[in-house]
Image (cartoon, rainbow, N blue to C red):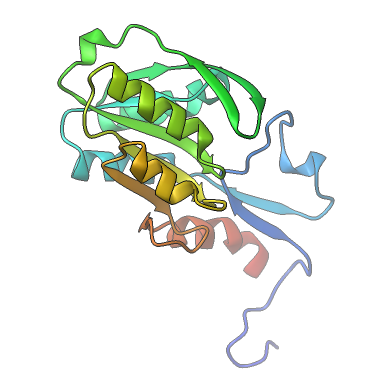
Length: 189
């Protein structure tokens, strides 16, 4: 019998996360020995774009993000582009932009799983402004915003900075509590 206000659990130790940044790994089981529930925020990001950014086009920061960014863009009914990123360090990022002329007049939305130092989005924002695009939006799943990252994104020309509520921050706009709850259900029953 469980104590009042607590859920009975079939597993004592477990982890639930949303869009883990696995980088060079294929699953959370390569990192943790306890069961892991994983939720995905792509549909929530797409829904936010549909509701808040008419005439959008989605931009992914690198080849690793293409499958995820494509899903966000397609569900939002928006075209997408993928940048070619060279990272020399946490704060040293360079991009090769594809030809974006066909999307002139659309609102660019930079989408990434994690916004930490903000450098990836900052460099991309500055380049978009040099290309004549206005009103770019930054959209991230996990808004860590180390040091002054949030302020630098504003200074670089972001018209809006939006994140999910996986990490508390003033940019939290997209609620993923239902995704976390669904991923946790197998461990709570």
